Length: 353
Image (cartoon, rainbow, N blue to C red):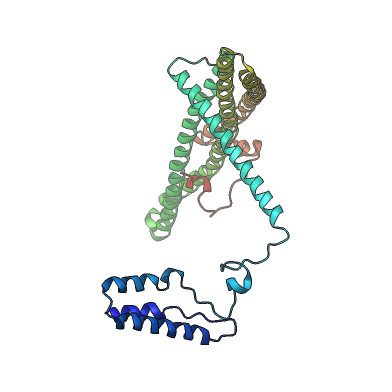
């Protein structure tokens, strides 16, 4: 075992020169082997063997260089991974990327600070400790709009249910009229009776389709009013309420800073807080004006639309159940309602959830 260790220590490193020759390395290894043999032959103890092993080559420092490429002796530097030439546009690209990263970091920082202030203000208001900007007249109008929207949504739901049921009734009348007409042809003894009923059901079916066109127009008008006009105004109101919360948050922050010490750093913070407060105040007042204008226009539009839709609904329902086919058709002509051709598919609005 000792011979194996000595042999490994003596022959582990055979450097190759730049020309690929190994004569010098082989000669050094041979001389080292002779010295080891002399020491072992002189009968030295195990301590001498350990000294020989320590004086041997360090395995951790072993390096095999192939063909002299990257060699410390010829390259003048330590061996390492080769680095390609940097592109001419490298520094500007790095600078631009750094600028984008800094900008994103600032955006996240501002967002986090704003979220913290607004959350703090909202919690303070909820527990009755924070002051809240209140506009009683505007808030009463907003609450009235939300209540009106809920009631109109209920009317829309009921009108859709009525139209759906009435559509099924018309389809049943159409099938019943066809059945009576078929029996009139095949039952000579009851031909007149089946014929009268067939004509009646066909007339009711025709008038029902006319009424469906009027009710469909009514439903479409309310749907536009509720889910577009009112919803658009409520979205602006939501933005206004968020701006109000931000305004109160920055106002409270400015008030807290104003009550503190007035050293140079505090004065700088107060100036920055005043600037942010003015920005939020302008945003709040602008959105408040937008809400006031939209509420006014919405009210005018609601009265105009519902006046037309309610008049249509009343006239169409009254003419249908009075059996006045001529008045029913005139009602549709008055509101420029065009019916679908016979055999058309079920109205698409019935498929809405």
